[in-house]
Image (spheres, helix red, strand yellow):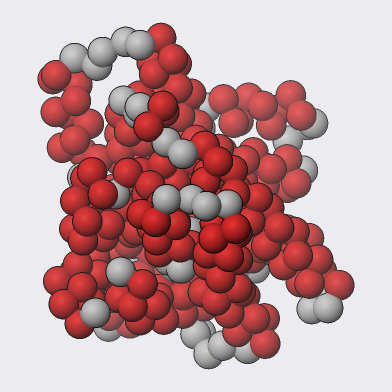
Length: 300
């Protein structure tokens, strides 16, 4: 457990911690971090997502295990949203994004590199499947649904035009098209994608750390509840559901490991983009990132 923590998890977590430290010390400003985050979102993440989806071997995935994981996402998200709306009386969009934080794990930028360090590429196939699911389906769903809920623009037509220009959604759509058509990506393009995509995770985590450094991090009732659901309830339900469906041991282990990961930064990014209050979302991301160091080391 200590070896996994020090050799595989902390090196990835370091960039988030470095951003928090330099943000607190005023070495890097929130405006500079926002620019870095924008570059990572518009350029580096699409470069990472496109070849990932375009070259996936969908036939190697356990569709039954993925379906169980997706069902647990829907269940936990729905229950959390109702809890936040009815008990904590949070606004609809804030409750939506906080609920997203309980099920949308930082798979692409955090769990994926960690799983490869621990298990290697072959053993990390289940995590790759979840990265594909989160990138192609869950991520797209939350981008689209949040935009539609925001009521920006002049109706659904304007929303569709905005979404059609979103570089992440474009990368997802192009990746799926190339994959379905069975097209090969030329080697120079793969080299360019690999070179630029490799910077997506560290730059995004660093920028997130700087931005989050300006938020109060003391956990109130909402933050504590959402964090507990993310780190305890969600992985426990994933483990239990997969135990009842006779999923292969490796898939059950790595799906549970992924479910126990920290909340994805996109809930915070979407909140900033659409003017949703972040005083609860920001601490949730920080606390799940810190506390997941223990759970991920133990599960791995």
